[in-house]
Amino acid sequence: GIQASMPQLGEPKKDYDAVRKAIENLLDAEDYDDGSFGPVLVRLAWHASGTYDAASGTGGSNGATMRWAPESEHAANAGLAVARKLLEPVKAAYPWISYADLWTLAGAVAIEAMGGPTIPWRPGRADKASGNDCPPDNRLPDAAQGAGHVRDVFGRMGFDDREMVALVGAHTLGRCHTDRSGYSGPWTNAPTTFSNLYFQELLNNKWRKKRWDGPLQYEDKSGQLMMLPADMALVWDKKFKKYVDLYAKDEEAFFKDFAAAFGKLMELGVPFPAAA
Ligand code: CCH
Image (cartoon, rainbow, N blue to C red; front, top):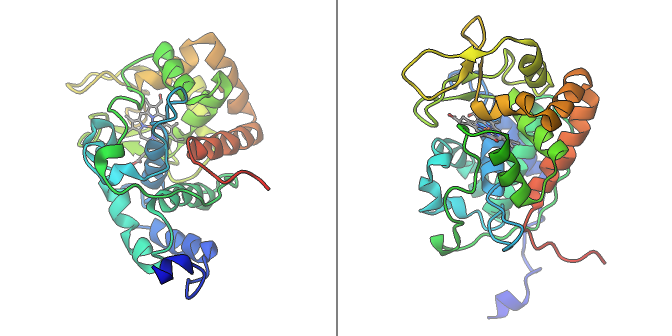
């Protein structure tokens, strides 16, 4: 109709800084986890994006298909309704932003607000209108597996070893929840601060199998910190460990590589208009 042919008229200015502020204002939460929704927002941005398959061009953040079943019910996404619901008031206040842009922007804003590097982010994602476009299950990594699996999954997205290690460094944030993944506990003692502490713990702490009736995970002597089997793979695999060593001693290198890899992750499969 006439309105569709005149999209500029009466359209609000797309003020992404206002959206950023609205997201920042949601982060602190005294009674949630370690006091911040930041980590779960980072996980939402990652799981929305990490379904990408370079060979078929399917999956990825474009479409925000995790709003729909079956993707919303994939086991890997357990708990992410918390993050999606948290962002609903922002979507309501700024209805011109797509969910797909909002979720990825929230991941970037959360990392920056928690002291991390500036994440390259640009808008351009569109939402898909039904669950028909959901990617198949099991595209996200299985925490019970090792280096070969991690390499397969991130290789499918188009990442190399260095990028893979940098990306998993996001486990410096947040924690595992028994009612989401079955695993339990945080990786670091500062789970709401973006740092290279995860790599320092991986290398310098002593990890042993946790004795409990949950899935196999590793714990330190205090019993407070944890590592997944897929985390341990980063020190057990020589090619991965090289980058763990690097990032444990050079936080600047980690920040730089993480920012680039996370920005790339969130753009996989997104049909941005070609540069002029
Ligand atoms: Fe992760 N992650 N992740 N992860 N993840 C979990 C939690 C977080 C794996 C497994 C798990 C990345 C890569 C991997 C975050 C960011 C990233 C949990 C616990 C499991 C299991 C979920 C729960 O119980 O709440 C595996 C396996 C891999 C790769 O092999 C990458 C890449 C990123 C981002 C760049 C963040 C953040 C969390 C914490 C979420 C929270 O709620 O605190």
